[in-house]
Length: 395
Image (cartoon, rainbow, N blue to C red; front, top):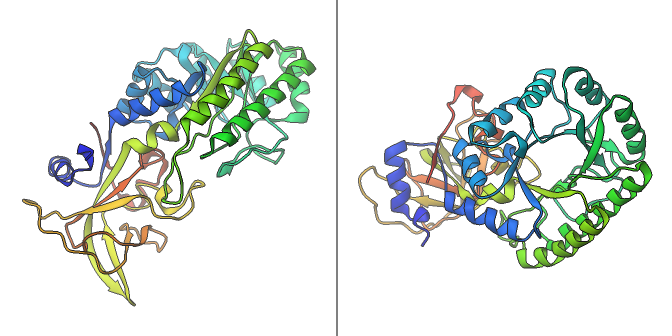
C-alpha cells in the first residue's frame, strides 16, 4: 500500500494540520517529471506553474530538471523564490501589463511569448527586450484532447495563421526579432498517437512559417497537453508509445530547425497525481431519498472536481476514512450511494455524486479526493463566502 493512502497516515496528518487539507507527494512529482522527460527525446520540459504554484512543488520540479513557464508577475516571483534562474523562465499569456513586461525584462527571463501587436509595441517602448517568441494559432485541428485552444477558430491566444507573416514584419519594424514559435493546441490528451500527430502537424506548420518569413528558429515550443486519467473509463497515457513517436519527431525537427532549442510544456501531468484533498464531514442528511454528506470544503477548494475546466462532471477517485479523533473504528459496509457536497450556498457545490464507498460516512469522518494536485485551491474561488485558504502540506 502507498503509505500516503494508508488511513492511519491520513488521520495523523489531520490531527496535526486539521482540514481542509491538501497533501502533495514529492516522490510522485519526481517520478512524473523523470518519466515524462524521458519520453520527450531530449527536448526541454517547461513546468506550467499555473497548475500548482506551491513553492515546494515548484522547487521539487526545478530540482527534477524542469524549466518553468509563467503567466503573471506573481508566478514570475514564485518561480524566482523557488530558485529558478531567469534564463530558465518563459513568460506566456494573452495579456500582460506594463509592470509585468518591465519586471520580467529587468530580471532577464529567457523569452516572452507574444500574442498581439499591442504587446509588440509595449515591448518595444517599455523594455530592452529584442528577441521574442510568437504564439501561433494554427489553422489545423488538434487530434484528441478535451479543451482545444487553436484550430483556426477565434481565440484570445496567439496570432492567426494567415497573419503570421505580417506580424513578423511588424516586429522587425519595431526592432524586435522573432527567434522562435510557440504552440499550444489543447489539454488532456490521453492517447500517445494524438500527441505524436499534433507534434507532427506543429513541425510542418513551423517549417512553412520558416520558409514564408525567412526566420531562422532558435526556439520551438510545441506545447503539450499531456493528460492523466481522472475517471475509471480512462487509461494512462502510454509513455512508451509516446517516446517512440516523439523521438521520430525530434529527429525531424533537428533536421528542419538545426539551431532551434526544442521544448514541450506540462502542468497537469506533472502535478495532478501528486495531490490529495482531505475534507471532514460536517453533517449528513437524507433529502427525498438521496443521502447527502456535507464537508468543510467544496467548489471553493477545487473547481475541477465539480466539472469546471474541460474535465466534465464525473466523480474524481475518492475514499472515506472513519475518524473519531482517537482511534479507527470498525468500518461499516456501504449500502447506499452518497452525494458529497461542500458547505457553500449554491446547489452546484457538488464534489461527488452517488458515490458508494465501503462504509457509511458520518459526521467527523474524512473524505479523501485523489488526483487533485493540479488546478486546486489557486484555481478555485477559495475566499467565496469568506472561507480561508486550505492548509497545504508537502511530504
